[in-house]
Each structure stands twice: as structure tokens, then as C-alpha cells.
Image (tube, rainbow, N blue to C red; front, side, top):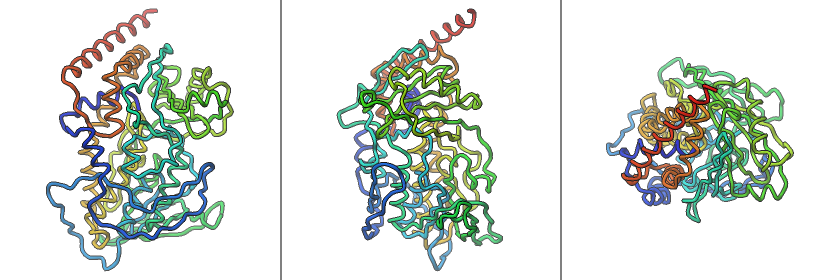
Length: 491
């Protein structure tokens, strides 16, 4: 997560939320005051990923949603059966949606094609997500307590000095975390379907059901066996290239290409990265994003991304490899990954009884590229809205019920996405601006405000005098950056 991006976002939205960090931690730790679901413990089989096997917890994780001041009353008619929901996509968004639906008794189907999927993702998760989503230590490869921001001129700024002994940024492998979340949803009652959605038949009547056509791969067939499923509601959690989004004409958005190489490096170099992450900025590694070296279980992930020059992604990857070579060494590439990453929310995220979440909805932040927490959170929020308005699956729902999720999401996160969009345009437009960006990361107040807001996903009010000083430093850095850019242009 980029440092200035988060702290600037914090400053802009502080007046809207005065919750302190201690209140946030208490809210995360509190169990959900709602229905309890009796769950029979069952030992899971071996996972499909390579590495340490993790058993999914069978207790429902804690929820952080707050009760609305005005009671929202369900208006749907009784179904005489349980509501049937298909969740398309088994990443954090889909798995968390399926889990929240299944634990209240809604008939839930979780459809995922690649059960060993390794999405090219930095894998960073904020500390609050560990508690909020009840994640076990076993799925966290590394606990990062130190970061280096590295400027275009290779100036290094150490970040993380304000973290306490118990605070860290979790680093996960997506194949491990996603597998755990899916298995937990399945244990709570969701039906896991190894399939790929092909098309969707919309209802012909107001209360009719959707017919979801998919290829079933559970038999081991390479091409899949055609199958279909009738459901009342569909949640599209199937990523940036979402087929569900296309079915509801959700609109196009610009996207970044993320490219990542997993490298096995020598033990002494791995020792350096055991609790260290690095972020590189500069025109050489990306014209509009950043490059990274993030530690994993027994290797590092080295990658970059871009929106405006996707065809040159391999050139930018070569650059990040070159700039990090003195620390990573040659290394052995054990996996190469590439994937589109959305750059902004889609124009349409809900239509009738279909809702989009995670990357399918476009919930990845500018500047930082953070998406895991927001994916999981959006999946949970849409599921909670469905459970609330259907009275745990006993009543029918319509578009107005799904829009409850959308309204809550936009109220909570709209400002974050908007501010980070602006900041990307300010700090990533030139190398002088990137130098100013890294320079500001050295400020201890910036680091404290950034980590407080990033780790706990809440806005912590700052000291007014320090805020004024920060504003002055920001303006000064940008003025110097603009002057340097003009000098460079003359050369």
C-alpha cells in the first residue's frame, strides 16, 4: 500500500469518521450479535495447493457491520423454501460471500473453475483483516514490519518505524488463502462446484429464476460437461474479465496488467526479506504504477503493473528485476503470472437480482493496487444485505434489496477510491513527482497516519498542527518536483 496515498486519503476523509484505533480494534474483536449457527466440525481433506496444508475453521468469523439507525424491513414475499444463490468465482470476494450466506441457512452454490488458482497478486493484507475474517496464522507466509520505498534515483526510505511489536502487514499466497476461504464456506454449508460459467438465461417473469449454464469439471474432463443451475440470485465474483458483468451489461472499465515472477533465492538473501517488503517507483519500472518485491513462504514475488502501456509490461518487468538484482540475485523463477486488474468501479454493479463484488465490480484502489481486503469485504456486505432483506433466506428479494449493499459500500468507501484516483495522477505523472513522493514517506508522522489507517481500515484523526505541516511539506515537495521536471525537460 503506497504511503502518501493512504495518509492523504486519511486527511481528506477524517471529518467523516472520528473513530479511534482502539475503538476499531474493539469492534473487530467483538463477536457478531446476531444469529448463532450450530456447525458440526469436520476435518477437511488435503488442499490442492503446493505448500503447507491448512484446515478451515468451522466457526463463522466475526463481522464488523454496524446496525443501521433506521430499521430496514424486508418486503419480499415468502418463498416456502430457502433462497437459492449462485456465487460465481471463488476468490476472497466469492468465498466470503458464500460463507456469509451459508452460515444463515441460505442455499448457496460457489462456482470456481481453477481450484489451485495463483493470481498474480502482491498478497498483502491489513492487520484488521486477520481478526475481522478470522484468518489463521498458517495462511500468513510472512509478517512484514519493515518496508523500503525506493525512488527513481534509487534513494531508499525506510518505512515502518511507527509499528508496534504486535503490528504487521500480512503476506499471503493467494492459492493458500483462497483455498482456505473456500473450504470454510463449504464447511459452513455452501455447495462447491468445480465449474466455469458459460452463459446466463434471465427470468421471463418477475419472480422467475435465473438459469446459469456452466461446464462442470468435477469429473476430470478437460473440456467440462455442460450443466445448468436454477437460482434466485447471482453474485458475480469472477474477476476483472467477469462473465457475469457482461451478462448484465455492466459497462467497460480501464484495467492494469499485473505481471509477477515468483523467484526462489538463496537463504541469505531470503533472510533479508523475511520481514521486509520493497516498492520501487520510476518510469523504468512503470509509467503509472510501481514495482514490488514481496516475501512469500519460501520465495519472493517480483512484479509490476501498468495501465497506459500494457504492451511494454515485459520491459517494465525486466527493469524491476534489474533494479532489485543486487538484493534478489539471479534467483530461480518458479512461476510466471499475469492478470488484468480493474482501475475503477464499473458503471453498473447491480441489476435486478444480480450483484457484482471484488474485481468484477472494480474494487481495486488506485495508487496502491490494494484489492484483497475490499474484495472480501464487498462479498460479505452483499451477502449480509441479502440475508437481512430475505430474513435468512425465507423471503424473495429484488434489486432494491441488493442495492442496500451498494448504498452501504459507496457511503463507506467512495471517498477512498476518489482520493486515491486523484493522488495517482499527482504523484505518478513524472519521476520528479515520484522523488517527492518518496521524500514525503520519510516523515514519521506520515508513516504513523498511514499505517494506522491502512492496518485498521479506519480514519484516525491527526494532530491539526501536524496536518498543517504535512500539507505544507506536500505543497513544497510538489513545487520542487515541478521545478525539477522543467529543468529535466530543458536538457
